[in-house]
Length: 219
Image (cartoon, rainbow, N blue to C red):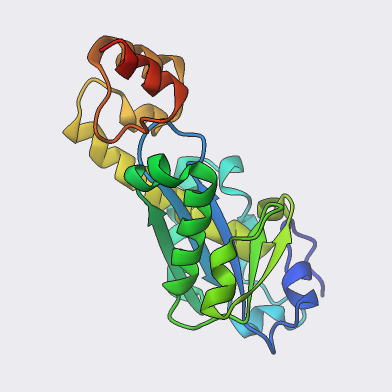
């Protein structure tokens, strides 16, 4: 019986899975003012592709932005345990400021793919642009616009990336009290910008992003 869920395995299956290993790849934190950009990569088990035999636990998987923190925290361990392979990759604040956020996000994606315990033949990447670093590591890329809403593997990758990055920002909360990192997770909220103006920029802030650059310019 076919399970009518969103996202699905339709795009992975079209690329040849289960005979070909397909990794779903997504990044989080591109628009933040602080912290690294983080990418996830997930290869789902071959058995999931047979007759849409998707476990009950994964039927509630969606793009990480559409899930509550509690739901993401519940799903992430299950994905890590049952995926054929999974990994996360980061690009640091220094790298973001050096090569820009676009290239840094792609760097994080390539690092996530490189971190997989099994090498995929294809990386199914959320968005409309492929990281140039995939070809040199021998992985073919395929883009999928709004892939985190269409592909189960990409949605799983987005959850792992989001949970990983949120945990990093929770550490910032204790290291840098008063900035509210535990609440805004580095995004450009009014509270975050207010803390920047009143307390100044930290070494975890992206110095090339306008709100941070403006604070630094004022000295």
